[in-house]
Structures are given as structure tokens and as C-alpha cells.
Picture 1 (tube, rainbow, N blue to C red):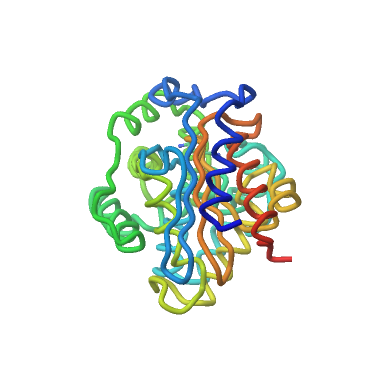
Picture 2: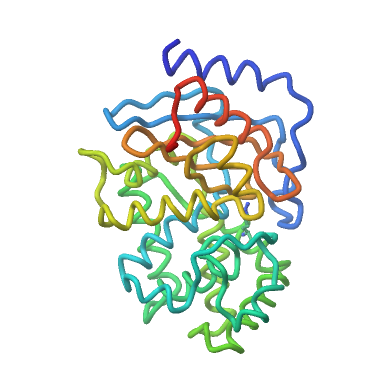
Length: 302
Ligand code: DON
């Protein structure tokens, strides 16, 4: 079967499914998303884009934004980032505060919320939140070769109004001197980066800079691309990262909007969207879809 036939087949199989998990409700603006949405897109290193279902419909990328902010931060300050954030899976929920006290304010990795808040603090540096967000959006638009990518302010404000966990994490980080800006300022930026909306097609295209193949957008060094992929496979799905690596065998980053960005090194970038989540906050059918795609295409890093 061709890639397009496989995508169409996966889409057809997902359509009648009733066991879709629950949409995220802790961000009120996300609670009303239609759980039956499903999109899938693949951008290949030879310049093709394939898609199925709602692959053209923008959704909230949420934690997938952490891949782009990490890329920007590594580009800005290089390895000194690792003085402030670790590179180990946490084995805990994405918004857990447990290890932060025991480990003296150094978050386990850049993808759990605490780590991502530190990364956002880094990209803020001496810029204003508006400047940092403009730089981030420009990075993503360049990567996707598409200017039609925006932040949904209502989603950002909705999370700001209810994000007590993240405020707790940010204040905790600040108490350990691992946050250089006021929590309000860093979190305002963080909530807006999470509220970026992209379609599966745009996300797959934006992911091409992580493929490490000739002709792909070159936004960071080859070496940094490898390191980010390593972090995606070990930490990209929080306390379900081992399970994702076992089932899919590829680097991936999930978001509570129900999206997943998956990289097939040297070959392709894949984006899937199904808003229903597992208990760990990862897309339930999205994971199944990329597992099926990887198996049928014989895609794996192993
Ligand atoms: O900070 C939060 O809780 C959300 N803005 C992002 C969390 C998220 O996407 C976790 N991913 N599966």
C-alpha cells in the first residue's frame, strides 16, 4: 500500500471508534472540542505531504510547543541550558511538583511543565513576552513554510485564569532561583506558546527541521536535532514515554490538545490529532494511529 492508502485506511478505522478517551477539561476553552475529530498528516524528506481526515483543521498544539521553544533555547544558549534543566524522564505526571522540591528546583527534563517553564524563561531573556512570542511564531512559520499560524488568545487567557498548578511550579522555581523573570511574565508567555494553533499538515511540515535530511529547513545544528529527538523519545510522553517508545519506536511529543508530532529520522515528520486523551494526557487514538502507521511503513529507530 502507498502512504496515502495507509493514511486513508487508518482514518477509516478510527472513524467509528467510541473509546476515544476524554478531552482536556482543566483548560476551560479546550473542554468543548469535538472528541470525534481526527486528522493525520505526513511530510516526507523527499518533499511530499500526505494527509487524511481533519488534517487541515487547526487545533491547540499545547505541549508540542515545548519542542519549538527547546530548539530556540538551545540555539540561544547551547549546552548551558542543562545547568537549569535535566535530561531524564520523570516517571511522574506532566504537571507534578513532587521532584522539584527534592531535586532543588532543577526540573527533570524540558518537556514536563516545570522544565518547559524554565525553557520559556530562557527564550524570554531580555525580550518582552510579545517579542519572544513573535520570535517563536516566526520560527514555526519558517519551519512550516506557512505564515498562516496564530495564537488563540482565548485559550491562553482561559489557562491563565485557571492554571494554579503552573503558577505553583513557577513560584517554586523562582524560590530556587531557577526563574529569572516574575512568574506572571514567564507564565503569560508560556500559556500563549501553548495556545498556538496548527493543523496536522502545518505541524508535519513544521517538524521537518527535526528529520535531519538534506533539503529540510535548517534551524538548528544536526547535533542539536539528534539531542532533541533523544529527549522526545525518552521524555516526550511524560510517564507514558516508555510505553510510546515500546509501541511506536519513534521520537514523539504530545499535547493535551490531542496532537502528537512524531519524527522518523532521515525520512519523515508525522502529525496526528485526536482530542480524546489517556489518563497521562496523551492522545489515545493518536497513539494507536501512529503505531499502526509506523508498523505498516516499517518505520522505527530500532
Ligand atoms: O501547562 C499545561 O498544563 C498545558 N498548557 C500543556 C500541557 C500539555 O499539553 C501536556 N501534554 N500532554
